[in-house]
Length: 144
Image (cartoon, rainbow, N blue to C red; front, side):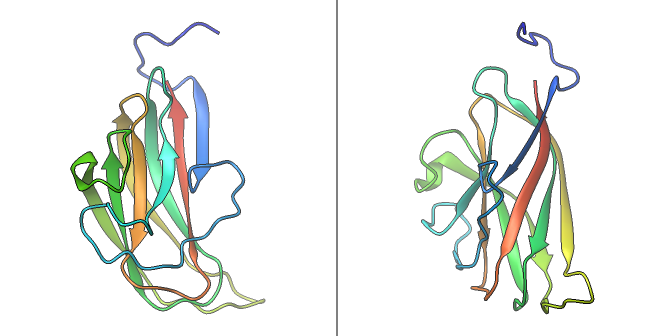
């Protein structure tokens, strides 16, 4: 398939959870910083290496019982995210306390980005407070 040299719309969907397609990981450990450099942050998404990617939103899905916390979202320039100079904070969203239940859904929180990422750039996410069961950041977007 030829490269999309002048992207207006994405040519292929790109969904990721914690930077992979396994959807198995959950964030539980607090990061406690505003630089994106904590080793406890997770890389939630990596843009297409050739043409970049469009990111529509991040959906934070609670997978059980958790205390209230905040998710901090950073854009990383494609280099190591444990170096603060490679990150910029993009935004924050409050995540409520949740209770596991077999009869009611746990909370899902959407954070809109609607942003085109440069090739190889990443989205890095961290929690402000350690939680028990975890939150999974699912990134919805497309490759150019």
